Amino acid sequence: MAKQIQATRTYLTHELQHEETSAELPEGMELAYDGICFQVDP
Image (cartoon, rainbow, N blue to C red):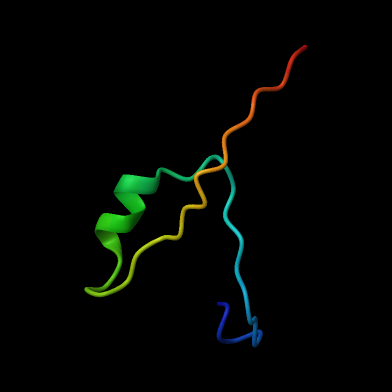
């Protein structure tokens, strides 16, 4: 899809299962992770 619409970047949400998705990627590819964590107080 990203290639079809000529996207230069794609964004993922917090709902993505990181390990499971990474396991499905082709060899040599992995999801990026910036390590940012934050807490939202109600």
